[in-house]
Image (cartoon, rainbow, N blue to C red):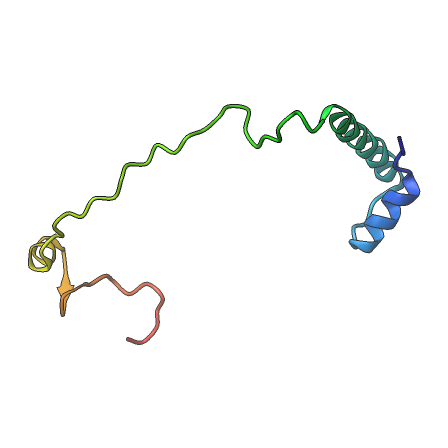
Length: 99
């Protein structure tokens, strides 16, 4: 199992233009090594007979079937609108631009 060295962390930080103190480099090297070790351990138990999962509980689609229904009448909708112009909702201008 390979370890992540402080030199590797410093190199990647430099490539990403992230300024790290020597203490941060050392701390991150240790933390990243722990993460890499955990991933390696998962890879050890991931065998072809164990299916890959993205969620621990099987999920099913619970959406209903699409049904064609009558739409609302435009005149009724516009009658209920606070303000309408030419069959469209009218709202206050908010961007300060000329209309």
